[in-house]
Image (cartoon, rainbow, N blue to C red; front, side, top):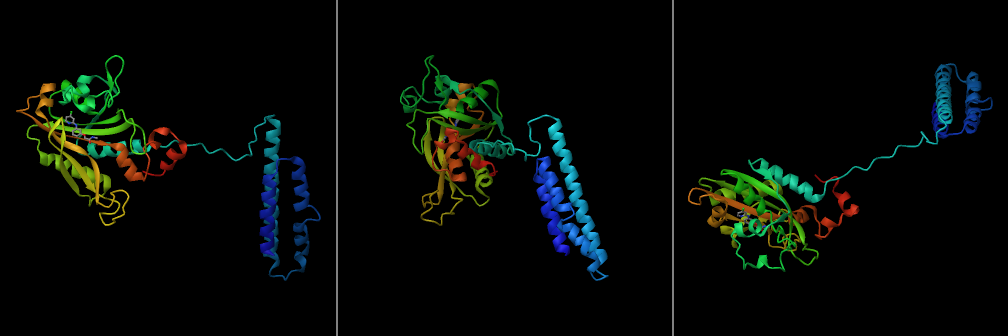
Length: 341
Ligand code: 2NL
């Protein structure tokens, strides 16, 4: 019988709190508390129960009755309030959950990289996306006849300016304005005249770093890149340097990180294509010609610089298979990153 009372109370209260009409509320009152109600019948039959059960069941019936009465009077108050306010706002409706914004995957990666380099004493600097040929090319030892300067590879503006093709321009501007030591990173959107497909885009993001002081060595570069790899992809990450050419560094390298997905053990791995290595970016010792353009004495100072594209790293990290997704602003894409840190 106790079970029956609890069940009765639950159904009655639920129905009462769901109604918004006084008429229905009155009907429910009659149904659950009226003379012919189930509750009244139980109360009337208390006398027939064995004496030792009577107090317990009696008490339970009383508490069910109280609960139903309280629910009715609360609901009555609520319905009256809504009617009196003359408002069409239904205060009994459940609240709307606000949509909260999420960071873009490239923003998340930028924050993460900035944190990693801030931890090694690098400071983040910003600069303009529209540049001049001097800061984007000449100051970076990139001669007039270099293919990157071709009309087919760079977006030139009508006023003779251009859209920056890398963030190195930020380093040049900083070095022009202050003497060594420099320990900085730059990060942002860059542009190259590229036909758009799943792996190429005319707008992409880059992060670069620069460290200039007395006696900065290639070993410092290797240690810094290795520290970044381990924080970004895990403590067992290995780094491999392959020799390369950039106009603004000498010697120059491209570097790869060991594959954090398969550790080189899966010949079919889609991320490293079975090689065990993920090609990440380039780096090198700053070319003396670059120091001369900004007025630093290359006999006194040395430095290392590195640069990497963010899209590729974000694609590996989040399993994204098409660069176009980064710039389409499709909420179905962006919302998937709300829970990824
Ligand atoms: C890459 C390679 C690189 C730099 C960028 C740099 C900047 C200054 C002086 C010297 Cl001011 N170098 N930046 C150096 C080597 C490589 O980027 O693969 N980027 C996506």
